[in-house]
Length: 136
Image 1 (spheres, rainbow, N blue to C red):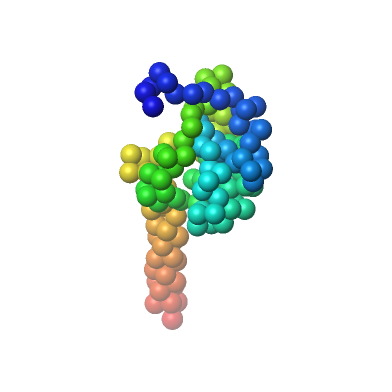
Image 2: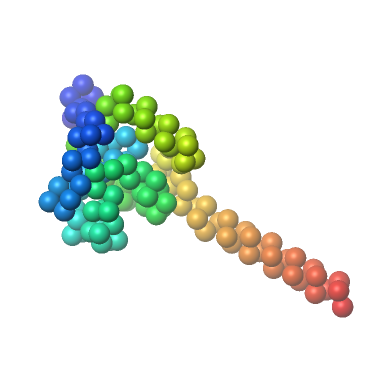
């Protein structure tokens, strides 16, 4: 689709597609019809149906989807959120502190999902060993 041919949808229009027979999701202001993907979704169709008709950006990012999953999304994209409603979702994103955009590789937070706990565990190990060594 050419840039000028991109269809736009309102939050109200997206909200109408909230059941198994028609599942639309809003992710980073893109509108996706994932109805045909329900049976293929690795996390099960329930996960998608639960988010149907809503902004699923936070849930999508919380899972830490791979770059392959992000590439796969493009075939289900049917349009963009209209400019007026983009302002509404941006305010919600800022309020919830999840308004960051993914890096071009698509894995903006996936490394953090394991690096932070590993770093904390290493720190705790060093503190524990230090404590054992000098407390005896």
